[in-house]
Amino acid sequence: MSEKNICQNPKCCDNNTKDRWNKKIERYQSRKAYFKQGRRNAILEYFCTTRCASRWLSDNIDSIFEHRQSFTKILEKKIRA
Image (tube, rainbow, N blue to C red; front, side, top):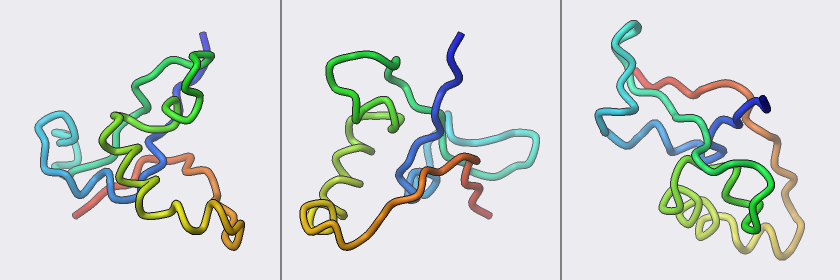
């Protein structure tokens, strides 16, 4: 079984939804990516929802086209106090 990716949107944990709340540490955190690997829309396997993906893409679309910034993959969940 393949390992799921963490959502690559750094603002993911800013959403106050019930499924982002971690009871053990009592904080909001980012989620794991929802879409399975190998689908047609490969970009979506790095985000938890299409809304999260579209927010990240709209914030970074200029940088993507101009190649001015290289993005590092997020490997750990982001936790917000």
